[in-house]
Image (cartoon, rainbow, N blue to C red):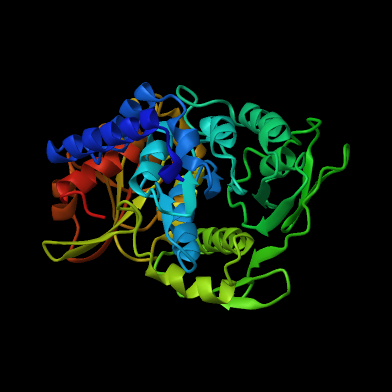
Length: 414
């Protein structure tokens, strides 16, 4: 760990911390990105040097990375201090800062952007790599999803080394990518969004589905038998030996129970007793504003982040059946400028509810709701949205920058 850093690396780490502190002091952000950038300029191998000697897990996928990283951190903290970037900053600059901030942490749980998985495998030599899911994201800023799965498959084949892979058995793209690895622990983490896995990634033939099971009748690619799964009844995770680990999560939905199952599977590979780890997951109440509850003018708002079609579908599964829903859509650089992806989302489940639409691209979203026969009103901003609904619970679903705008309105609520 950092106790054995070279003088150059120690100097780079000092500058990193200084840059990060200045960023926070001037209100420009938490300093993770600029701090890591400064440190890596001074010592390009700083990430590798800071990771040396630690037990590292990388967590990647299209959706659920941040939440699963928080769950994993909480679970592993049962046995020791964990360096983590579980509030975001999931590229090498953020990873470097996370490790620099916790020089004495024996463990590290790092959320990893899908496009940087290969770089982090080389730099961090992880003990475990958790692969959650792959689904379409905005194509003007992200790789086509099957091409990304092929990139992961090649990367894992050449760079996974001694890592154990914890992978979602229900996602054919993940199974295909991970099947080249020697040590894989399969988790039945579910896949509510199947539009990107109708075709076999291995041979291009149609995939047959029978409930949870899926297979390709041409090349034989099929769903592996999972060692970990979400219990069919109740809120629990079932381990490899059939034992149930009861959950009492504050975060809603089956998808978060699946994230918890992945976290327990990862933690067990670090020697954590799942029975000891499971209760710790209930301590996670929100994740960088996701699922946060905010009281404003007699309304109790719950904030949900949804960045792509799969994310919106999962959010609709989490919301309560009766409260009004506020939908907010932007199309800035980090969102992707093209909003045509909203036509991949089925909004019919919102029919019959009070729906309020806001955000930079509210008119795009209004047209989409009109197509699905969902009644709505359009307002200028979140303040107007709050005024447009009666007192009581309100569900707020927003894509990335719209979500950050709402958090800023509420003083960066976490």
